[in-house]
Structure formats: structure tokens, C-alpha cells
Image (cartoon, rainbow, N blue to C red; front, side, top):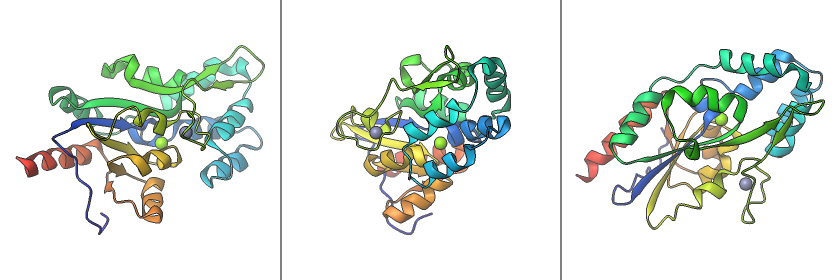
Length: 232
Ligand SMILES: [Mg+2]
Ligand SMILES: [Zn+2]
């Protein structure tokens, strides 16, 4: 835990959660798992440039998938779906959100062909899932970007979390971000409360942002419940 005073969830406002997918809802990053498995020449340098923020996420992820032939669609999709594991406590968090009027959005830098199938058992409305798209009609796999940055964001996110978070006014919403890595950095700067693991912890420390460390969604749920009791 950070030693700073933690920002708390404002229970007088509507609570809304923005939850990352890769490395957060799933235990590992699916994009990295796919690219490592198929191992096309040149992928490691691109990943290092994304993680080191020398290359935008949109540019880097686009380049990674262009290394894979679209003809291998079935193998790529099957590998992604069979390889992923859902982090413990996810279904419990969703259930709690439903019964306690906490809005829940998946804000993912991942790709539609694995995000939607992996989430299908959990009954999340499609309008509450934001991710990137894919096009297998050409020679190489082409990623599409239906939720790119609006004018306020110059980060070239691909799937822009701050664009979505900003649609929820801070006057009426307590905005909670859950994430693990580079796709969460910008959102963590504007969210009211941050749950972090992995790279996002290091980034929050670097930026002086306070955060709740988590490993499973039970950890997240414990904090949400405890902060409800604090106001009652
Ligand atoms: Mg992630
Ligand atoms: Zn953006």
C-alpha cells in the first residue's frame, strides 16, 4: 500500500468502475501471449517500445498484429481464448456491482476476437464493453480503432480510456479505475480512485498518484465494502 492518504470512493455520488481486461480481468496479457506464441520476427522490439512509451499503443499494437498473416485467424483466435484465465473474484465483483448499483464498464486495450468470447459467460451488456476491433480480410491482421482518442487526448491510445471516463462527470460520479499496465496510465491520472497491480503500481508511484494494490478482485471488493461502512 502507498503511504499517502488514500483517496476514497465518494459514496454520495454514483459509483462507476472502469476495468481493464488484459492482465486485469485475465491473469496475463493476451496480446503479449499471442505474439509470443506465434513469435514473428521483430515483435520484441515493438513491445519494448510500447512499454517504454516510445511508441503509442495504437501504433505499436497495430504493428504487432501486422506481423501475423490473416490466414491464421482460426489458430490465433483459438490460442487466445484457450490460453486465457480469468482472475479470481471477477464474477463476485460483477454480482456485487449489480446488486449495489455500481456501474461496471470493461475498458480494454485488447481486441474484440478474444475480449467478447472470454467475457460471454459473465452477462455484461455489450454496450458496457469497450475494446479494439480486428479485420482479417487482408493479407495481415489489421487492428481497427472504433474508440480512438477525442480531441482532449494526445496520447494516441487506440482504445482511449480517458475519452470514456470523461463522459462521466466528476460532479456526479465517483470514477474508479482498475488496471495493471500501460493502457491504464492516462486513465489513472483522471480517475478518482485507482486499483493497481504490476506496471501500473510503478507508474502511480512515479506520478505520485495514490492507489489500492490488488491481486484478486476479492481485494477490490474488500476495499469497496469497507469504504461503504466508513460513511455509514
Ligand atoms: Mg492491461
Ligand atoms: Zn487517448
